[in-house]
Length: 161
Image (cartoon, rainbow, N blue to C red; front, side, top):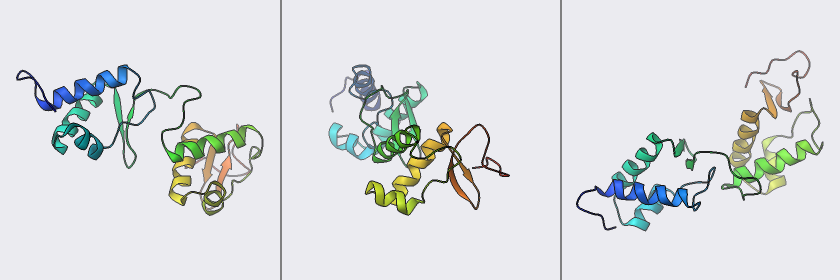
């Protein structure tokens, strides 16, 4: 990567990523390439990539998600293809819940059953279920399982998750 004498490499990288975000190459809700991918693309060290990404996080353009990577701040546009497999699974489960396949207060199938249904790993299903829980579509009842949410939790239980 070439950069001017006035600007360190991380700032040049941050500028380029900022421009790509503004141009929609990395849309709101979309994932930023991994540190390794950015290192290879720009021919820079990991520290340079991390400094550039930290700059974008400080500006509020990018948010870091532990174990998932970095995502452009904002919600994905309607109809945009999910950035990750777990988001795709969450979308399919969300649609099934809204279509009434899993009515309110009904216990959802376990992770192994859902993993088989979607042809994916259990951890992918777990992440998808976490997304739906954060959205308030499902609740976790300790020792009982995951349930489709309603205005009140299933009989004699709390909404702890």
